[in-house]
Length: 399
Ligand code: NIG
Ligand code: FE
Image 1 (cartoon, rainbow, N blue to C red):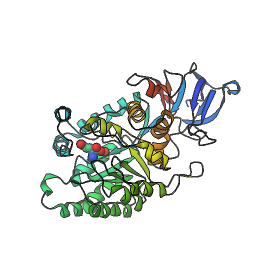
Image 2: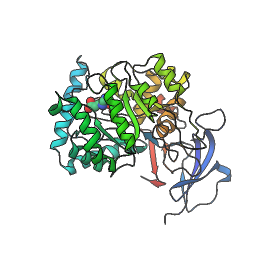
Image 3: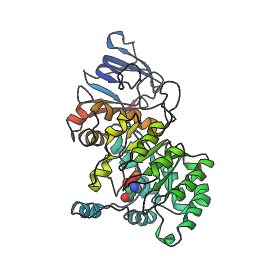
């Protein structure tokens, strides 16, 4: 029995409670009581109840833990040389995915597990308390099942991405590969997966293949999300909305019709149940690391689209595990305000995973939070690159 824990003397508490005009639901001079790993009470510090233990935040800002809703953590090897070549002028094509597939297939379970554990620990130190983890570097029945089995040791939000690219051995018969993904691979993956994802892009999977694969996944009980409109305009975003995807991710190249489709997807009902609209998840680490133009979040926000931010942590296009870095990029390069970026990295990520138990600090939510070495959330973007996460609590337990 851990007992109750009071986090006291919070200068600025970001609750994301959705009440009033302030999306961050900021409370000043607040305290927060934790019982059984959950938020039990939030209120003015002067009314703070007694508790078994106490953490003095000493006037600092306290935020919900980051919800990183898009990460590829099950892989082996790295592609630093490919990054260097890009910085010398080479374009990013996604072709390097097959390099990582080769390294991943050659790795032992323990090697893969150690990599996930290392990246998960990096994330936690930087305030991430919920992470989605995709397969997609195995691309055979046994390898995709193995990747998901390992991912499931670390998160509830596991995603089957057998349709990442067509592996070399199927290069001249992509239809057969789609059949494999929809048949035996899905059957082997589904027991370990909550979601299904497709890389819908020129050079990967077209709209017909993506629709077929996502429909099979839905029929197997998996929720839909997809990689869409990353390298150029394409059908992915509108396909995602049509299928009721929880999220379409990247959204770097959007037409007005794409934005209208996202804005027209059903509205988030934060306080009365899980969100049911399609979130646009932006991944600025990928634009940073592929030296591509950033998506314009302002266009999406002004249209009323729900926006999330995530790292896309992977060895090719975005080898960062840092949500603070993504928040800073979003503010500086994507026309988001600091408040919008912090909301997108917490509540937005939760919406993208259709979760109401994380991404907010309201009674009943999981006690996942970070205490900053800063007085307000603004400092995450104002002081980029500075380790501002003083302490992280996950399920109410200091890490
Ligand atoms: O989200 N775009 C497809 N998948 C990853 C990149 C994977 C890789 O380059 O290894 C992404 O950017
Ligand atoms: Fe990705």
